[in-house]
Image 1 (tube, rainbow, N blue to C red):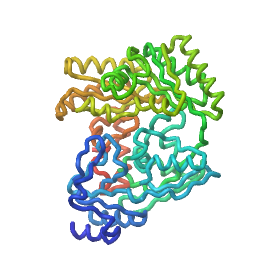
Image 2: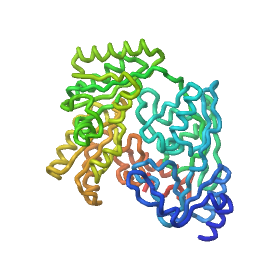
Image 3: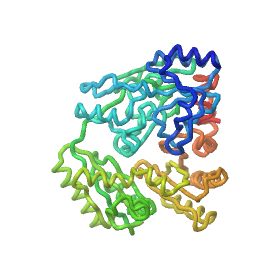
Image 4: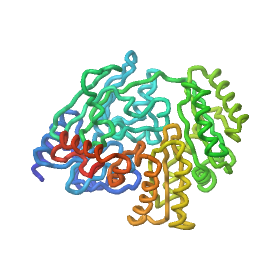
Length: 461
């Protein structure tokens, strides 16, 4: 093994490799803070260096786990003592911003926030947005097909990528840095790597699609009297606000109450006695007209009893105060510790029944102890579910998983909406994918990574 380490050091230099305590001091995800146990962390600075690193690892049959911003929550970045980590933290440059073609060429280690800021500098926007924007990387966003709060308008990460470059397990560089909206010449190979969680190749660079910057942003927090009213409100907002609707986030009362009353970290913007709340956001081009239209829609929603109360943000501070209730995951983790986190999708019409069934099953097994918090991207059919039974043991985790995923199978849902599979959900993949689909996934893995070196054990058993 020392021979391989020496060879890798010759490729990336002394600053490009971390050993010993420098490895152990790093965590494998922000959620658990578990230390990295890999034998070494390799930090290439170029695609060419990474290609040489992978060629050497391929010859030595050395398994590799890729690290980006380490904001994942499904243990996709866990590395064992006999595995190497390849970190893309030094491949973080924004190479080109092209206002004419509305594209940006970036290295995989660039953070989402830097990309957003670079787009803003040319009066455009990169529309993917999520709470971990300051830490998550573009490579990680691609590898997990990240979603976030604006999927309802702009789509998942898949819709934001025009071209990409990836390094295969044997060091082969597949570069398809397409800048065109239309390219129907043969297979769209980039789709193999988007959402593959680093199991088919390591994404190194990408061409991102930019969108016009919308100077007008309207945000409101509303109280909703029932789930039926919540679904009608989504349909109403989608119709009345037409193409300007950019986010529709639902908060169950258990989430809103925890964040504003129990934790007392955030101001109770609306009274805490409503069963549901929603954050509605629009993006437009005319501040005055958009504000008038948005207020009129809220007033009409009140008249039709879709909402019982509303607060419309009148400043960026008020807007941020509303979004902080939704995005303050750290407070959720602290208040519910020890906590199990789930990211599922299912038909909107089934959400209320699904959550009610979860509550009943959890209470039956852990009476007076279990607590559930629910929120998510309602317009995308995506719910985030946080559960504590005040016992972090593997036995309790497995019991909760059986309830969450076992119940989900009754409603034709998916075990992962946007977080991926990693290690945490691997055993439940058959709930969301047919045997034929899983078999095809394994054939693809075998074709691109025949020695099983890339992120071994993740996604597929």
